[in-house]
Image 1: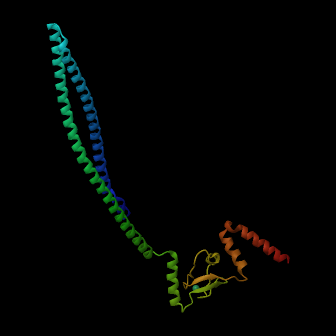
Image 2 (image 1 turned 45 degrees about the horizontal axis):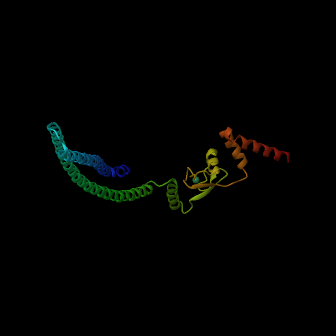
Image 3 (image 1 turned 30 degrees about the vertical axis):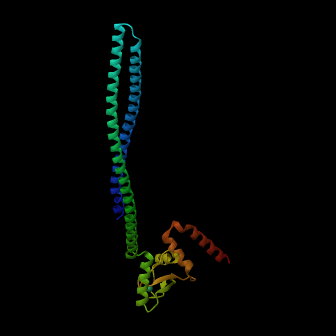
Length: 250
Ligand SMILES: [Zn+2]
């Protein structure tokens, strides 16, 4: 389920990638459009220069005196005219190319905005899907909790069963090492466990829940258990020995 949620955005990634490619292509073409525009301006300026040169040469025609001067000037005019014509052709070519680029750019702009819409739509779809999946996931997790109850619920269940089978007496005291539910003598180690009260303990004979009840024989019992357990409770043991000593003194 978690994996499914992670895989939802894959379709978005594909669409976003396409959008990025379109943008890149647009940027490249936009760059060459800019370059062509600059070239057109450049050619236009060269054309103006060529025209001025030709006009200047034509103006000089009136003041020439010799045949040689005339021939030289005539050649200049012809060259200038040729240059002008070739520049005009070049200009035309560049203008055509800039027009083409412009229409391609317009088309790509449209594609990009369409793709952007597509991506947006996909994003909102994904949001909804993820929300749905998360709701589903939470629901499943809730059910899972119900199916595998915690220890407390397990104890509750046992307790309910005990109440039903033992005429309502589910919890009994453990006094003097004896379960007061079934009057069986319980092992000292188990008695000590019940005494610590860290966990809910059940009588191994009658399954009732046990709680520890202090009694005068505690000390003796504890000492016996401590002898079994050893180091851990040494301090306690010492304290008890001291207590015993005091009692003796009294
Ligand atoms: Zn019992």
